[in-house]
Length: 175
Image (tube, rainbow, N blue to C red; front, top):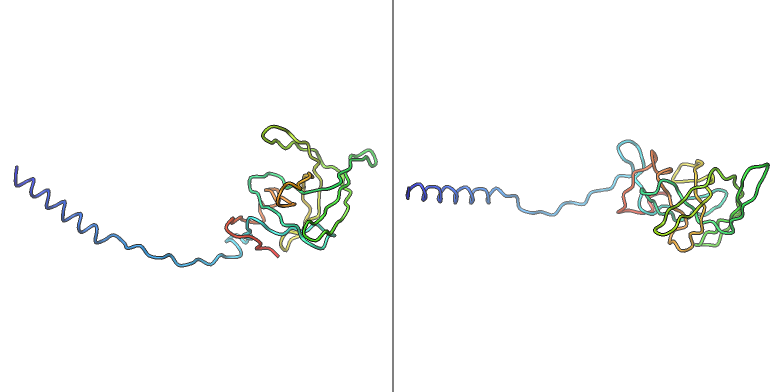
């Protein structure tokens, strides 16, 4: 029994020393170059990207939000009215960076409810022409006064899906 104990002790010591010798030593991982496009030809975009609203000439800095179903836009001087029996809204977009201002009149596609912690806010949804990267298209945006937010536009999944993959470690990848 005593010999068996010594044998097991020696065996364990040999196994431990040999497994320590095979342990890989830590090394510095080389930097990885970020590719501009993903394998399925979708752009890789960052947490903040420029977005244009033609006919305006300068972009807005937009927060990319994969948690938001719809996109939102900071609108000033929102006025509701009727045209030909349909509900419309007029509003101004004012670029905070340079003051460029443009007044839009858009038919309200629908109204949505945005739920916050203690209140629910009703917002109009309108179709806006938008330039995002190299693509120009029409998409839905909710209109709200976003002057308390850092970014004037919020790009949600209605724009991102099928167009881009988001990497939050980068920003301003689109020009």
